[in-house]
Length: 376
Image 1 (spheres, helix red, strand yellow):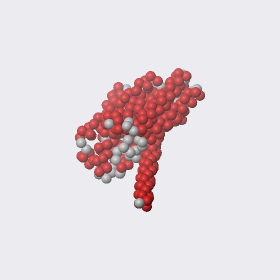
Image 2 (cartoon, one colour):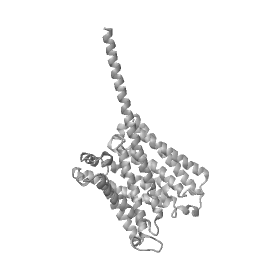
Image 3 (spheres, rainbow, N blue to C red):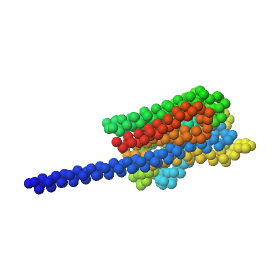
Image 4 (cartoon, rainbow, N blue to C red):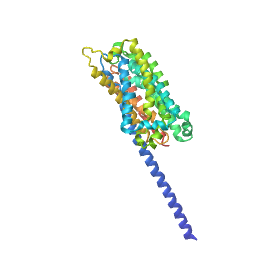
């Protein structure tokens, strides 16, 4: 009888050890996948935070002229080319997707187009570091929470410890962004107009802030568009597309809507400001080829972030919406560092620079908190 009990005990212990080992193995595999996803997203954030740098090399063109060429690359040329390379036969995917889904993704793209144009204006009036911090900060909070709130995943997540951590991560990110904004405000108060315009020719704190608020309200439609394009991703997977690139077929639909909005506004400004001649008129000391090349390079850098973002998002498990907050937070960090390199903070007091550095550290911490929340 004792022998039997011992054997039973050994069986129980053996089962317990096996289950415990499987649990540890699953956790390690999950965390490894999330770490890989985080690396992809971080690379995408660097590309996103760098995309506006080529604009500084464009000479003699109005804002609407180079923004329109940039959008042709970012929203038409590179999305289609990427699909042709990584998702051949992507056009056949749309046949198996409900027309209502395609229409919704397209409309969300049009709404994002308003945010896209406003984002361009925020960079124009605030510079790279402040423009990114204000605009993407609002997109981070809204774009991370609203899509899962609408489709019910946030309610599911809030029943776990991961939900509380997600909210904590968003709040921490907002704190860091608030510090960045405060640093920008202090810089604005301390520097003369001449100093501000050394690195940002059209600097206007009020205009830039208003544009950034509009970005936050409408720009997060891109995050919603990615979530609503998940049925397109599923069809792409069934058609044999690599999971890393399953998000690509949805992008031409989403960004076609964005491009429609862009065409309307940029052509309106081109007619109003008589800048349509920029595309063909030769000006002494200005190279049209270089202007086109730098505008398209900006489009390439912007779109590459989405390929890397899609690859990273595919590794983030069922709570893919946490990826958006990570991308936005790390993009703000990269853009702020570019702003320092471009001397946008030149002449600012030491305490303002320290405040800006602290805000970057807080934002980086927030991105890790948001990423961990998806694994709990």
